[in-house]
Length: 397
Image 1: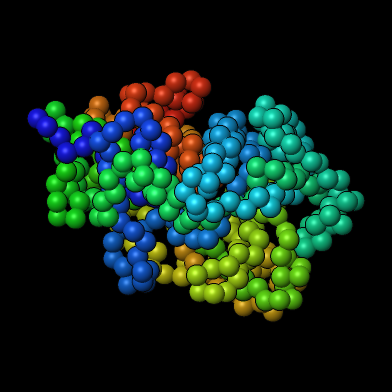
Image 2: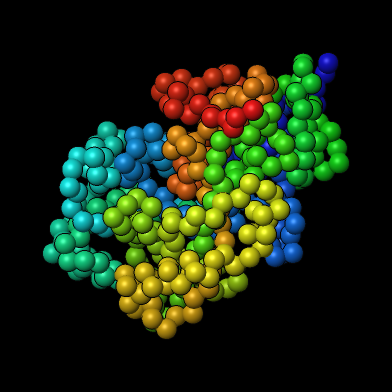
């Protein structure tokens, strides 16, 4: 039968919009389906996305070669995307890691230094005696060493990046359909997609719905992921604080365990007209298995207990924040048991899935979108794209 589209991408977030842009240079007959950001978050009862924010850290420094490669490939395309779309989203302010000296070759820092050499990234090692002088905004233990990536690092505005991707996708011939997909069915010769009360058909479909990929029965079988609650602290920055923090790089302070790391974004203007310095961690244990629970979390202000924890850490690391108003916001992180994103086909040869950001994927979203596009167009991913590592794991039938 004739289909409405050759390919449909479900999910208009960071990975889905990137997949649509890349696929537009490979094929015709593409649709990108997903809702826009709700105007009133606390009154919205549909799906959400985690890119509803103004800043995400970007860097290639990573203890895993695949993740470092995904980031480097994406970063190398940022300026081209900005130039072609006319939308700026990348601030190349650098990224600083600070932590104790590695104890073994398996420590995160040693692995990241090895990956950086492989990728050709320029990482400056800053001795503990010099760290405080170079980065006076940060108060860390006297034995901490710094690892500073000045190029191909800083932060991106995820909202602006998604706008840029969608704009270029549409210019490339992609049909943008502003609706929420509520059902998906392999009809044998094609896939039927229901969105916004209408039905669409396609030869192949890519589900790139982030933490919402298992909701609305979009997949023949749910992928094995944990959708975890995350709370961020937002410090309102005034003129005094801008003099102290205004030129800081993105910063990650290492803890005893990887989940104890704290990330800090420089002061960034937000839509409410205020400027915020944001920080967050990776320790919350609340997870969601139902759309209703995830939606309720996004309508909240996050966890008061986590905000209190982050506020204590913030004042230890940045004492000059004392007295600044602090608020919180909710987010979710979508973790896979493999530690890698999923990019592969489901039990249906016509339905593929791209998800599993593992709390580190925003910076790599353009490359992950490219992998989703290659998957749809060619039917598989090769070794140079880490195809084996990205094989989806599905929940038991």
